[in-house]
Figure 1 (cartoon, rainbow, N blue to C red):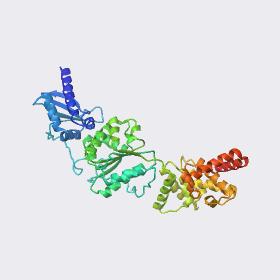
Figure 2: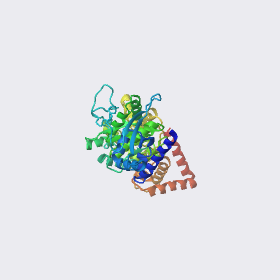
Figure 3: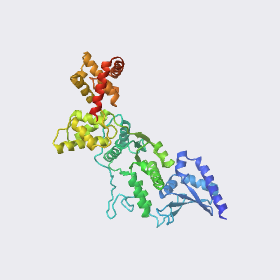
Figure 4: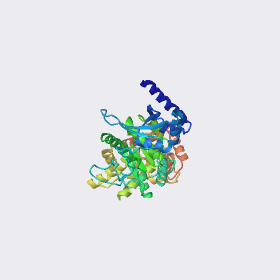
Length: 480
């Protein structure tokens, strides 16, 4: 007896979906109608299951006329629609939390259902310790992170510019969501918190919230355990600018992804701003629902790359300025040359060097920097710098380093300059343009010519080849 009813119920809803599909855009259909399930058909009343109170309210607010006409077309003039709102509990021994609501714009007054829309009323703030009362939402942002102390370079220019645009008009740009991705230690958290802090300055009345994906997940689990999932969802629906750090940690957490999916939809549809970070591009995220990944791609996804040498020097100088300290230029450049992939390690090297010099009452120099970096900075492989190459070559030929940057055409100086350029290109990660700047502002074509000259002479001049091999051994020893 039940089997025909289930088929009829599914047939009715399938026919409704065919009509709805022709009247809404594909993205809206996928977001708001594909998740719906028909659960009962009785006395010309079709009951459909939706995943949240917000989902129900959104359908009734935006699609009530379409649903009303569609149901009546399928079930006649007496046809009606009801909703079954199902929120699952965290434990399997409890039945799903179900609320039945009428459709067609008639919201029930259910004394057992509280849908507060004011953080000052009955919504539980998941960031507040039980027993403490707090009406205002703390942004959880670190005030030290700002655009002023986020050094701009080629590696981050697009992300920083997009962030500034979002901070000037949150929710009002095409960068929604704004996803910033990249490896550990490149400044993702700094940048997104800088955006949040700038929004607070520009728009004091907007509610900004920064939360890690792990914190969000734990709060959701707690809400399920405490039967306060509706409060959890409603709390996050109040946020004007939501920053979720490390969304890749949502991987393989289906229920967390589901609740975030609905929060995301609400915020995006109501013109609120979402800012996300990840350790990889959306297309490379694993263990994530396709519908969530598609939303990550709606706005702008931009990466933070490894900073170049000039940017690394600027970062170190910013750190020194903020801490009120000074270091010799050659020490700063040595650190920038040898730590190339992680800004945190870059700043940590400065801190370690200062601590070492203070404790041992020594002046910071290249030799001390080498010792400190070996002992205090883990996983750092020392690389030779252009300056150290110049010093070794000039020491070998007994020449002043300044002559390498001069315009003189004396044979011994030109030879030393060419060998220095050759090793700078071979042993460092600097561009040809950067190498040329270290030799009196010469252009990249001069560097290319010098390298080719050295290679040619090594094939034809045994004595010259001996010079180059001796210098290479000294360079190798200096980096051990």
